[in-house]
Image (cartoon, rainbow, N blue to C red; front, side):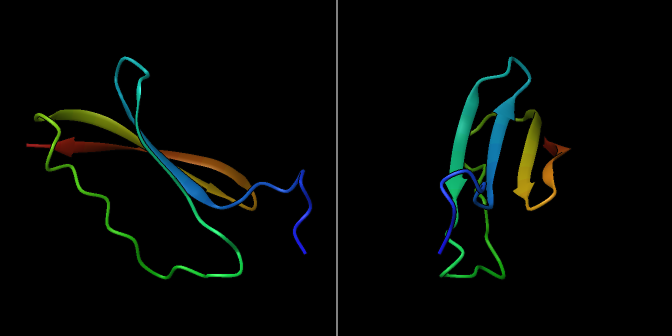
Length: 65
């Protein structure tokens, strides 16, 4: 059973102004091997994709042309 203090895996997409555009949470009992995040509704530009793992958050820039 998961502890209430244990962070769940997930991801967040931010614009460069820091606004959260998408926030996805996953559940440990339903493992996800692949997830596709669509930027179809977003204008061209630079975004930040942050992924939460057991070790913390990892962020990467994403460029949509």
